[in-house]
Image (cartoon, rainbow over all chains, first blue to last red; front, side, top):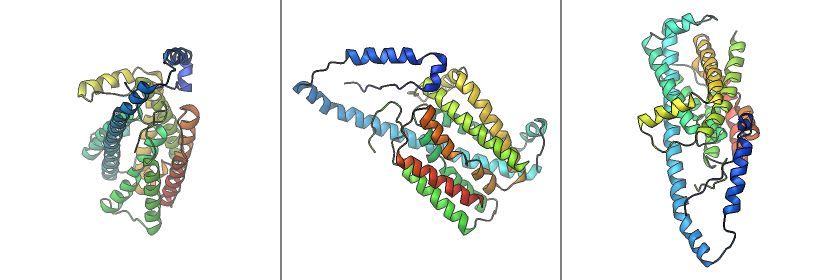
Amino acid sequence: MALRRRQVPLPLVDLLGERKRSEAMEEEKIQAQPPAVNASSMENSRDERTPQSTESQRLLWKTTIVCVIVVGTNVIGNYALARGLRHIGGIESWSPVPYIEAFVHFWIAVGVILMVIWLIARLLLLSWADLSYVLLVTSFSYVLTAVAGAVGLHEVVSWVHWLGICLITLGVALVARTSPHTTDHLEYEK
Amino acid sequence: MTFLMIAIVVIGSTAGDVLCSAGMKRQGELENYSLGSIMHMCSNAARDPFILAGIPAMAVSFFALIALLSTTALSFAVPVSASSYVLEVALAKHFLKEEVHWKRWAGAALVTVGIGLLFI
């Protein structure tokens, strides 16, 4: 039996008038489901475990790979931007011209390209994973950014900073143990 | 100027994240990861009203972050922009109807405190 997703309409989507249509379709699907539970359906449910488990594994691998890309591009992008901005000096202006001029600098150009890749990868991730999952798991980039600041830019990282780094890592580890996808009520096994 | 930039970074990223997440959920999960498929998804996403509203909010947040990076240390500017985590998790639960497990709340609290320590 194919894996069936139960789409839960987003409240924000209501603004476009799509919620009622989705609910009507959902009701039709539920009514079309056979209610009987017999021996053959129990056999089928045993067969369902394999595709669902495979789907869970596929989702976890995909989520992990894209999370690594999001974190990596964010850390290296921020490092490149900071290094470039140190070369050109501070910008404190409401005019966009100095910011656009800064893009011709090598490190800033590298930083901007990486941040564009970061944005696309993050949007891809948000197409299936929860915002509350993506936000917290990718916050590991702050740990790597602080380490990059200490190692590459020789910024001071005190023991309080290291404590902060440990707490962030613990928080990320906790969140990473939850399912990345909850809005369609599918249970993904870890 | 620094605190104004921090406020712009936080508000812009919060609004941008919630709007983009809502927009991308409407687009659906990408099954084929060829360059053409990704470009096709990007072009569809570029026509989504939520993403059209979310990207400018994130862009404003990004430029404010650049301005912040030019005047403050990297280890200060980047972590401080994440001070909106608990707010974003609450908005994800309320507006996007995500099931926020206690582990996520605990994770959000730990990350926020950790970022606060990096801020010191």
